[in-house]
Image (cartoon, rainbow, N blue to C red; front, side, top):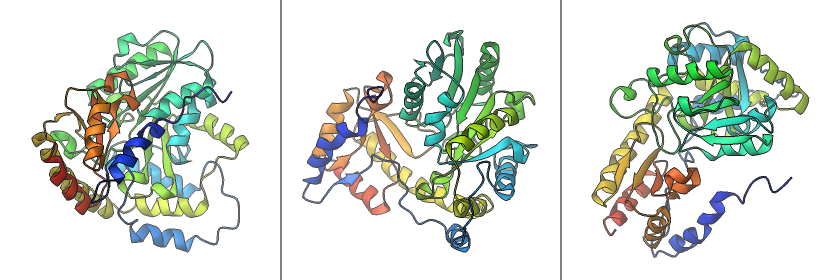
Length: 366
């Protein structure tokens, strides 16, 4: 059973990290999208205040937590009418992604669809369930035996955003297939380009669903917008019947979000000021790094939202990674995200301002 998955892909980066570490001025890590700025004080205070949590939390989560999530969807995602029964706090989003195919009962003979350029956790979920994985962005190409469809808007690694028209087309095809469709929306507060700077559509938007949330879920994480990666604070929302079934399975397996983390989530969801501030910090870093990459000969693709710049020099991603390592810069090879990423490299904008500036200086040597 342990051979269902290959070696963790990040192990392949180890030799290049070692090369970068030998740079006289040290390595600059622009690979992992790991928040490095402080967790907001309002969130820390809520966690501290809930430290005496001696009782077991419920799997479904406290009513206050679920009400805060539902209200956040109404205020920030333009999705009115969600009840506390339509949402579920999760232990980060990656565990939900990885286990959902198994929880939905997918297995041999079933198909799970993921984007052509895809975050690696979707593939892990298919492997856990033992179902077939299809990578396709075209709804017409999704097979008849498709049972679960993953969308990712804004996308990791590409930063691509799906507008209402494309989300609606995907939902329509899912309904034809009788499949569950889930949009991973973890970067939705971090839009940069054009109309996406102000708002990125949610799959639960009435303009997408026509008021029918059956077999539709949105998932979100507070790791990015609120620097809560260490808290493992995320949630799912949408079809209440689907949520209830998932909750039942999670009860049996002990998947529950700790009470202090839930209280921190309530605080984070109720305070948008820290999110707006964090977005401007990331904007400054992005606007510093992006022109430097272009000047160094990279072409930027998508990158309309999120914490990454998806770029290419029109060569093997591993050649680019090797050249960057010699400069003491670590980025991510695009083939981690599928064969369509073979010529691409992902840069993160989660490094410090100083590290971004030093990276810009080194890119001038490419």
